[in-house]
Image (cartoon, rainbow, N blue to C red; front, top):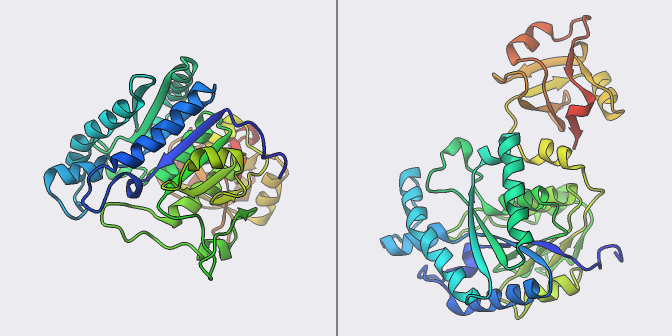
Length: 354
């Protein structure tokens, strides 16, 4: 635990719609002011802060007079386009000229393509290096299609934290953390077990998506990336400052594992799998021992992927244990699977074990 109690310099803060918007979907101006004040204090003290902010769709719904989240992608996009401007104006207003708010809108495509991924990273680091800028990140809901949407900002925040090698991820919501069966906050989680997952339930709010289920998924990504993650109640006084000072005493702390290298993080969490490769036990053992995947160990192939795409690697029980950049197309691999030609399917340098 003492390894966690360090001076976190680069911090990603995810702020949920449930915090920013009242039941009438209007901005909670008092809460935004308090959060902005904490962030201003941190940046002034030399820390680098990136915000992943929900709220655009909810604010757009308010402007349009909608009481329930639209089901059609066109109206979701319209709501986001209208609400995003008000959201950014609110941040700029409450930073009061002391800090500049920089808007960055992302989709899966920005993570999936390696060049765009690295460009997004370079842009964020350049903004942070300026010293008086806070990047405000949101999913680009106004142009996203179902194929390139993240679907929730919890997962986006974890991937952004991995993208910039953050020291800490804080997910602020309207709950005190992960609750046990007796409704008491679990302070520290060392491993996300089936029992931990069973404690989560989806949100029922009409303006939001996700809930504790997606927060636990995001926490797992952060943990596997070597980044501590805290889920906490954003409405509590000075909660961000308190989490940074004592992360194991505020909300629920998810303790990180040994971090993956930057390229491995991208393979594991920065891309969408384009297909599945099912392997036998011998191939699985070889991969776990840092060997390459050969065609002889492939049992089945699913998906119409191309050479160079990222695919999910699974065992015969359909448990995903790796991801990698495949050297053969799905069509070619179907022909070569199980063959003694031992064609290289995924080189050991292009696979990450999850």
